[in-house]
Image 1 (spheres, rainbow, N blue to C red):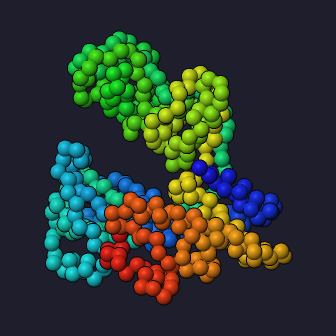
Image 2: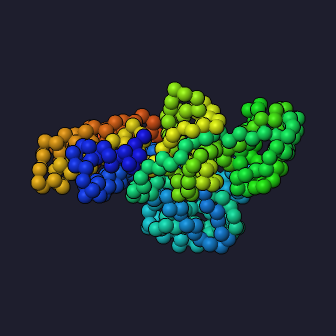
Length: 400
């Protein structure tokens, strides 16, 4: 995975210019290039899909769309807050403004069962208007790509992962509570506790207390050894000499791999929660060997939403722009062409009508797993019927 810092370093290497001025220019080119890549095919990339949750307000026609969603593709509506037990259905998402106006003219009133949804600016509108507070809405949408600017963070070291705790006694079948051997030191909240049998439960832990409670009884006896993760099940990372901050949520962490004990696995994990200056949680379980009382080096970095295999694409585009546009003192059309070919086969620069380079690879991967929403690789323009200057005529009208 390429972090923002690594991407800037590579850009300066490709442009053979390490000046502070070029670093600023490179940052602008990179952010523009990330947006450009994410906008190809109308932004219809599988990796740009995201799901967020909001709740209804009684007799209010709209909910505010979370800022990380650019476009709502569909949504699920739950009569309550638990989609596993409460009735859930999928209202129809409307993408045409005239169709939405015709639906509004029917004056469907209010109901606890909205039938239609429509995105207007940063709001998702409903009809009928929801009549009940607190129903869960699961929004499926495309990521709103934002600019990057944060340098890598490397202060301190990693002391432990996962977060290990001990109970005062073994647990029997049917247990719905336990007692820790020491007070809970992280913030009060809901966490996931993993028992020795492999069972896991959402538990309530209170800062400064030893009591642990959960709702569903254990179906197998467990020893006193447990591990604790975030409410979503990601492992908790303990730092030493670190100053973790809440704005690190959404960035990525990699713990360095070594030949010594207590090293990391050199894999990147997304940060999903923040608890303190020395504790953060991953969005997924840690797959490396357990670290205990370690001093492992690490890096936390900001990364683009592009899949790891394709993160060179915006750097190639930025380098092509530099050599072809922003380097009047030493123009190099040959190098500019070289980077355009590496980027997309020269389509954007008008060198070719057929996608190549990294963009072609991205399209091929998207096409392999598509079930309808994504565009298959095809020329940007040309004499055949499949040229796509702006759209694919075979896409459904919804734009999905």
